[in-house]
Image 1 (spheres, rainbow, N blue to C red):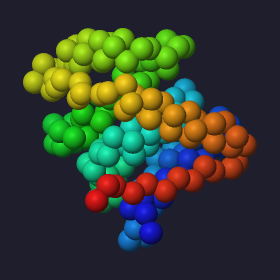
Image 2 (image 1 turned 180 degrees about the vertical axis):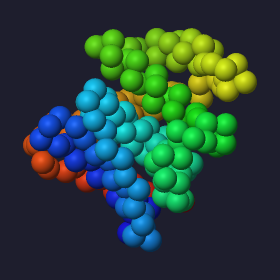
Image 3 (image 1 turned 90 degrees about the vertical axis):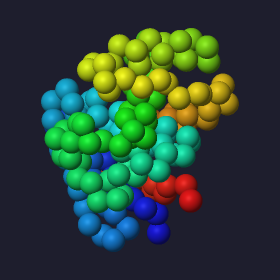
Length: 168
């Protein structure tokens, strides 16, 4: 069994809900309404692509698998492990690229990522962008495109389900 089953439901009103079922059967979930209902599914799927491809054990989904609740990420800002903060940084860079409407070259992505990383507030939370090879970038983009296509095919009232397993 995977560490986590990720379910994203597309509601008929445009909202979405993220439900994560851990290997022990326990569940955490969050409804995403209004503009967040459009933003968070792609954000959550980008996390899936980044964490799966780059092998993060303690990214967002790894911590959820360990027992964190989704709401914990809003209240534990200073206590979030470095690896989870690094995964969030990488996800943010891929989201910036997505919003620009074109794939950056590997050097452009790394340059924009370093600029983004250096602007993090507060300064004590800053960290460098991890080294990303052109192959890493291509593999994240390929998986992200595949799960985005799956999400686009989900009709109102239906759910996308993905299995997430951390690397051993």
